[in-house]
Amino acid sequence: PVLVVDFGAQYAQLIARRVREARVYSEIVPHTFTVEQMLAKNPAAIILSGGPSSVYEEGAPSVDAALFEAGVPVLGICYGFQAMANALGGTVAQTGVREYGGTDVDVTVSGTLLSGSDAQQRTWMSHGDAVHAAPEGFTVLATSPGAPVAAFEDANRKLFGMQWHPEVKHSLQGQAALENFLYNGAGLTPDWTPGNVIADQIAHIREQVGEDRVICGLSGGVDSSVAAALVQRAIGNQLTCVFVDHGLMRAGEVEQVEKDFVAATGVQLKVVDARQQFLEALAGVSDPETKRKIIGREFIRTFEAAAREIVEEAGESGAEVKWLVQGTLYPDVVESGGGEGAANIKSHHNVGGLPDDLQFKLIEPLRALFKDEVRAVGVELGVPDEIVWRQPFPGPGLGIRIVGEVTAERLDLLREADAIAREELTKAGLDRDIWQCPVVLLADVRSVGVQGDGRTYGHPIVLRPVSSEDAMTADWSRVPYEVLATISTRITNEVKEVNRVVLDVTSKPPGTIEWE
Ligand code: XMP
Image (cartoon, rainbow, N blue to C red; front, side, top):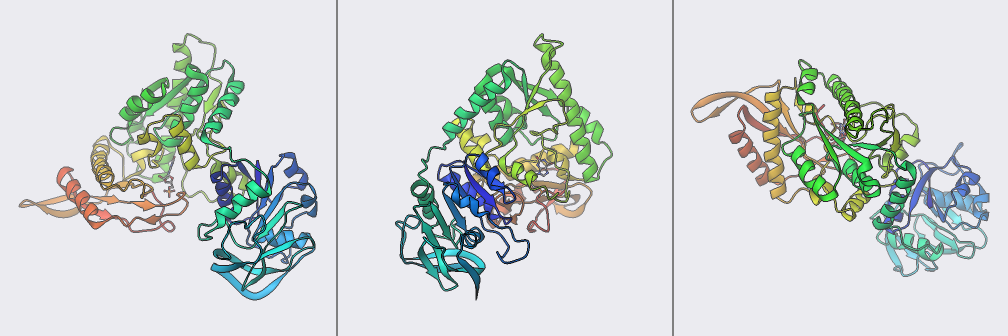
């Protein structure tokens, strides 16, 4: 792999993605890794990311000069560039000019790194310190007002560095510079494609499970569906998918999974009707965290019972299901390696992803992938577009979109309103602009309205369309007024008990995407 060394800002993930967009496989490692640990991963190249520190600050992460002696091509970016200069005997100092944001850079020598790029180019910078003198043997490639040495290279030793952020789209020729480094500097071939990912995973899964029986909790979402399709491709009917219908689904979901997904992939599916069980467990509960915990608990119970039944139905009683497929993605892996222990804002309950204290060994075929890569793999596997391009939907489903107690009537009402909103957003062609649009029923709120000649006293429905890249932060989507008007008119006309539609115009933070 190409290793991206994370110096602690948000850039490492972005760099890793850009490398993969260049069809080269990349992995993120923490800057606390020793040179030996990095080399043990047999890296094809190493990229040192940007970071928030100054190389002179006490405790600032440094780079062991031994890294540059190993013969592995290295690219230093921003902080990584300065740390590299520092380690190799260049000088880094404050210029007094802090460059932040769009900055024009003059390319004096294009070399390998900036080959083919314009003599002047717009880049995105964020730094206070700058490299003043390049280490011996290096050619200076570019300068900017705040960075006397804005890029350098020693192509013989395969060492490269740049002050600006090539991974950020505002650096107009950034991707080209990264590709120069990967293809020409490091001599790598762009062969990391969805097809190859699938082939590798299939071989790996076959070897892992042998003849064992495998199950997968299917939610109808992208991750669990693609993971299931991939495992099915590898081991066919040794896999059974379990879809727990907890009654908190939106309209048409069970049917979609049964018809579209099964037809396209040939996955063996067991649907468990647990609607009554979940309703009873949720009766009388309105506290969001309590609801979430109840849903999580009932889910696991149902799932475990289904696993036992699968073995019995297969006439293999006494045997057991050994493996569980999970749709874990790369950002989860990186984030849990971060170890900082993020505050528990909500207890997330993943229907596709059960807790691993269930007695199964895990198969996680998407562990190395970002969401867009999962989609590409899904397309390649023939998973239908309706599933591959689905917007996220929370495991606890409509249970956390009814503010108040969850009842069968309220679920029906919310399902109707949600179906209308989805239909109109799709009709308006907004599905791929909007990250997701929770539709929330304020079941404990009533307001007065008038319809025909009569007074109504009904509930409000909240529309919460958001745009986001990763759900960590989000902004409310500027959905055209006409579309909102149609949704509002239809919901208030067609859904009994609802006499008001309101729009949530809160970003995240401070709001979360879901209301509970
Ligand atoms: P919040 O509400 O925390 O949501 O801003 C962030 C994203 O996560 C989804 N979400 C969940 N997904 N299980 C899931 O699988 C959950 O318990 C859960 N809660 C929230 C939410 O829809 C959004 O995409």
